[in-house]
Length: 559
Image: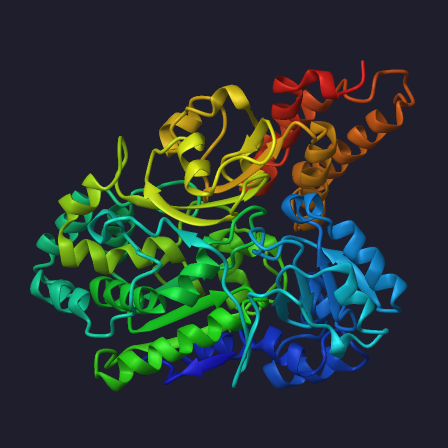
């Protein structure tokens, strides 16, 4: 774990200090080379863990479990539609020990490839052939890639370029600002004092909802953590962006890290925390450098006094985007979701009250304080604020576009240069949102409106599919993702994700089940059981790609 100014709280007990030491277990395994002979034993001794626990962690995370795999080709839906299969075949033909992997948060620049822990955009089969079997020689010929003193860097397309700054919550094209106006306003409103009502009221007036999934009102979380009787508290940034179709947080951390760090500092002051953890997926090497630079800039300005920032790299696991699984990972364990209640605001990191937020949510806070909650609310339509929408697939300019919360698909795609081909379907919130037909193109892309048709906005990872796509194939790709990324903790998810994928495989093959039923006869029953019995959101929504595709596109499935 890389720590900036790290220190354990003075009142931490020996047991708590030991827990923090165990939290370094994944990082020590990484330093030892991953799941290689003797690594688990050595790391167990160094951290005070059991060898079984160390081996369990090493085998759970993909980047630790298969450290010899230095080339991984993204097989997410957007990348496969852009030729990822051909790129992987070219890698193997060139003699590279390559494999497919889950979404790399680069759906706007497909096909994406992970070289060790660095993501490369727009990699071609020719790029693979040029390596001649040497993975260290792999490079992307994309015009986006630039070499810097700290390695390669690249960004995707963002917009709209002609938007008025006051209409934007984030403004990805704006200049970074390290003056701390939001921090000053928070102090003026009483954040972190016994008279903080004005601060929390401003946050409530804004109508800010969590931008990472469920859309839960932010002010309720903040008040809950600030009101806990336990004095030691934590703030955690969830930057484990793994939802297929989603890449906005990547762009946000690279372009406006100032807003992320200032938002975290405001949150820590407001809820009475002095320790902040930033959990980044291990593939986010470029965003990490940007955040470290932003922390240094604010520290140089004297605005982070008394605050410790810890940057933690994930080791490859989509499930760690679930907030309690993320906490388990921070504690050096396998990333398996906890049963709730209790919720993290009461019992979070190391059992202490914890405020967890997505990157976009926390980055909205400085602007809310600078311009006022009412101004932020007015940026949206029926729901508050401007929103970062990711759009990929069959559009002219895939990218991240900041638009009023509640725009339609047609409006979003217009900002992205228009459709490529005839619209057939779209995912409004990544794989977790399932599919909607073209007839829903004028439905507002917000939390309430999408919920009315059994979908959700989630993290706003919009994937557009034209009429060349077989929806059975598309849903099979999403089902494979959920099967691969299930943590396996609960039976409904562990068994259900495999059953659904196998059912579609049988349907593709035109075969029946052994009892003579048709291949998809029981998928609705299995989907219900998964939704009712799974511990976390992955199992609860994993069937949605299949159930929605069958509902709206029955012609794409076997009779």
